[in-house]
Length: 311
Image 1 (tube, rainbow, N blue to C red):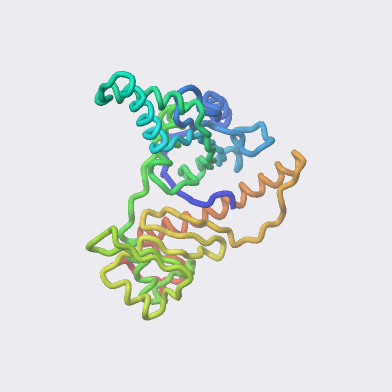
Image 2: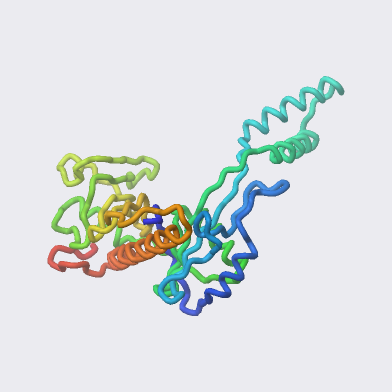
């Protein structure tokens, strides 16, 4: 399983892009280090080290895997502030006048430009699957900010990519709480595991996080009074385990399917390994999306007798 997180954004039915057009588009914004005064840069990278492809096609080019790399300069505000203070004190000694207002801002701008050139650049990979077959954009991220960066980059190279965020599902939130209150309400496709996060209904900053707990115990169920479930670790069809949120975001994804092979050093072996990993990732995420998407709209899953309708 290549993805560790999943945010799924539905694609408009009118959106289409061919493999050739996408390959030509992503070359326009290749991954690279920050230049000059840039604080960060996001671009399309090769799908794996040693590959010369930036788009990996599956299912007759209806499913397209891409990997983005973000370069970000590490320049803590405290470092800038300390250097500004140091330089302002030197100026004050020379002039006998306090450096403030516009003059201090100019010093700060000069310091930032100078220090940015020397700042260490941190890299981060973001995996994306453009799933035209199921009309969804899958992003290996869990925050709105990161997903928006990905969308903006796609829009920059291929024009408008009409997606809509999945709404936070009250139905799914109610169901997760019901699953903890009574095991008989848990759908056949879902197993509740040992991790959950709760928030107080009157104070959203007050949270309770449980790890390695028996979530169906009376002690834990007592915590559910006046609290909502905002994360719950589950297994889906025995294929993957993850933390589920009411917004249908999946975090901490772990495949429960044993790996059949390991990555190889030679190019052919690496390509075969990667192709099987992408194939498995798509298959398991597709099944997870089918189950979670159905739960979010109140569809029965598996044994209808053991699935409670949303209140």
